[in-house]
Image (tube, rainbow, N blue to C red):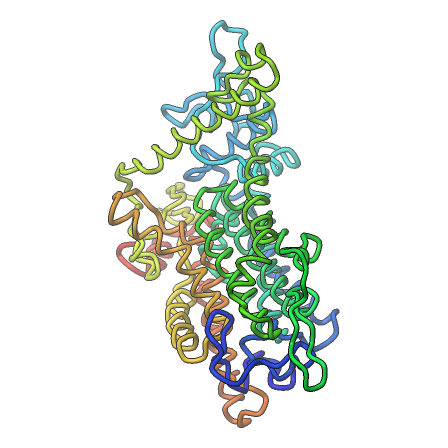
Length: 567
């Protein structure tokens, strides 16, 4: 399986028989001869080197990312941007099990000031005066806020506490990306490169240091993708067991194993696809936009199944994927995500304090009607939230359109203050600017074009997966911009950051070339990759003061506003 791949993981033979395309050559060899399959139709390449080295490099990269993200995580000592919602909602969830109304929600100052002073008595009480805190209407599912609240439970309701979960999640995403890139390319250096580029991205850094929901959405989407890559590897490596085909006897025909549909793909044989469903359900439980990735990845997994069946020599692979494999696929990518999403609302179901939660009336009825009434209340709540999202057209000074995002034309100022005399000069600035590292983002545009060319020319599954993920996370927002005129922001690109760096990593592997390529080409390729990585590091170093809330002279802040639209 590895003989036509080098440490870059790039194929040296033809890769046109992609998992979703028809065979273009002689009939596929049987599972007894996996090395003869078309390269793009095989499982992800097995990585070289000891397991220790395969983990040591990604862990070191993750440690570097952790140093950037946890360095003075409580700075600035302020409630930044939408932290005014999520820090309080996370605290409410760990206190009451549901979101409750905080003081000063009209001005967004009273409760914030109390929290920054160490006072968690921030809740508005309904009448009569001794009644419980009033329910709060919220428009996002609770899982991301539960994760924020976990940090507050561990470290207190202060800036460090409510940002801790975001920072930890950002670091874990670096580790996961390094590992999945290593598996996709068969190269530990390229895997580390992917993790390092994600660690060096400015938007990923800022979101990992801020109590917003988007870093959690990004994490669960990436985790779901990584599980599906593992599932593809494991399933594609055991076609006879999973796809219901038996190797032909010498000179004889291949026989389809006659079993009840789905028994060859019973739930226990695809644990990584089930794990992917759980992760993608968790993504939907952070933000509803996770459903775009759930649908796209379900289609992608099915296409990979068709490719694996074809590689195993199973007759009518598409039909088999839609019949024999359908029950397990529906369970993993339909039932599991739905149950995961429902479970994230457990606090709302169990507490009488949630907004729109008619528990008192429901509890007086028989158990069946109580459950049905709870579900009706829950469905009504979702209808209200959907109307809010589709009708969100209010203007915001930092809003931007999806076609502006890849060019970083309008970042989001999460925080800006002018503390007097704190920097040794007359004018000082303390800023947290939500913007990506330009070297990485503009390089990713070129890499995505390379992925398009690669997939069209070679039908390689890796290029196709990256393009599908990018499209799932970006194209729906074009619809909302053109049809609904919805208010949107640059940080909606957060779930795409891992796939942008994966595109850069695979493009680097193509540039370096296979082991059999001329030494000069490989040396030049590694040199170019090294120069690009150093440029990304220098770019982040230059921007770091305005990404992490350092207090600097206004001249230094102004010099880092690379475009006029950043101000």
